[in-house]
View 1 (cartoon, rainbow, N blue to C red):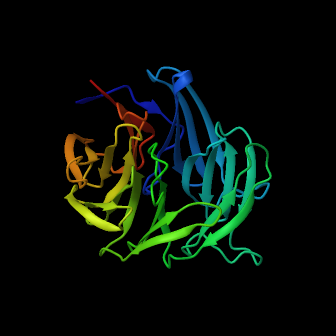
View 2 (tube, helix red, strand yellow; view 1 turned 135 degrees about the vertical axis):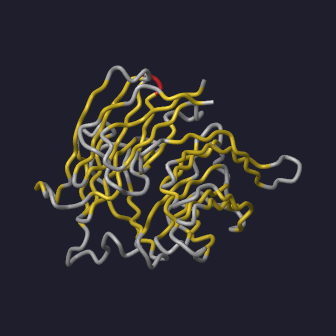
Length: 317
């Protein structure tokens, strides 16, 4: 069971995007960072575990070094790398990378320029080399398997580093690409569109969970590229998924105003992937935009809603 806790107020409301919430737990400081997009701004909040001590920061979309307020930010997410953590913003004009607390922008990459044919909706995936520190970030590869705008990208967040595939990307038509990362990315499988947009995708321990406009969650075996389970999870469009990296709990949010928590695992006897429903929460009168676990065990989660200037939190009891 989960109970609703005191909400965290933010400076401006959440835009109506898929996956419009990102979290970064800072366990040694008992803090969680939250990021929520509002137009050309990102609302950042660092909050103590009890939600009482808050610190706010707003980041604005920029074109190079100049403020460009009309450039819509479409995604904001923390990328946890082996040697550092970066906050990455993707806008219509380009990609900004910040230190994890949002204090310093360390890199800017322009899109839709005469020198760069990659735009914000072409389906291209840009791969960057990130040094352990500093600003010497370089574009190393462009992956061009998708023909429609990318909706989500996820890496395998489990501790299992021996997985055959460790990255998955989804697009607006519903196509999934499963990759093996490395110095050169290798396409393992390209899965045809299921019949609607894949709005959110997550990967854990060789298992892929993909949420669709149909309200269904499809569970794939990443090593085989095959569907193992189909879950009729929501009555309307799924707008966000998240997975707890330690426990394997899966959080789904839909436009039906429901949040659901599932457990995904492999049956040790058959090695088949199985799914169990664990919890349902109705967020009344809220059009859900984003939902994320606040810790790797999945003992707390947060949710944002369109035109809602707060982050609603739930804690396991």
